[in-house]
Length: 131
Image 1 (cartoon, rainbow, N blue to C red):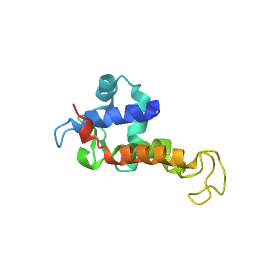
Image 2: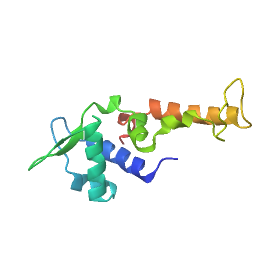
Image 3: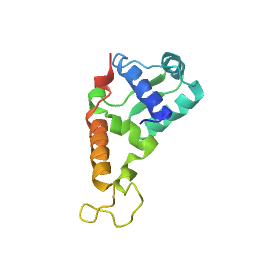
């Protein structure tokens, strides 16, 4: 259910979570460890630096590190900026007046699946993914 980009960024953040406090990990090293394109991953991590999930430092000895403890970063924090899962609040069939009181044909089934998936994203942290 996750895009390739989401999977790569999650994997990159897991690698960053393994780094000792105060250390930096270069994008080349991360890309090699998770088998992702270096340039694309670098751009994605820069985007996550802008939103405050990672910190970047240029130059020799620089790279990336997590901006918050891995216990405080959920999959929702990572996936939302990429996949915009908040738009899932609308009707699965596109019915404009679909609601709990005026449901479309799949409203209740979709709501159950959507709620379970979003809860999974909100409760699963980067720390819980470290092996």
